Length: 44
Image 1 (spheres, one colour):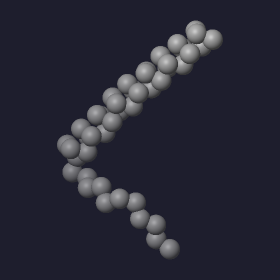
Image 2 (cartoon, rainbow, N blue to C red; image 1 turned 180 degrees about the horizontal axis):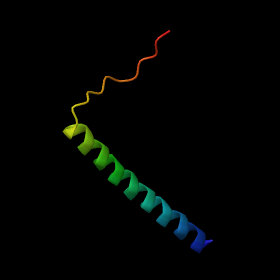
Image 3 (cartoon, one colour; image 1 turned 120 degrees about the horizontal axis):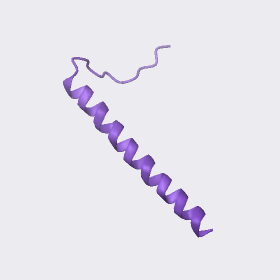
């Protein structure tokens, strides 16, 4: 059981790190981009 919890914890840490890296990439792209985010609109 201890090994299973350790594995799951390490996996979550890696996922968190990858999410942070991707978030930085997206933020840099948006800061350097000429695109403007207008949000998502649903037209009926």
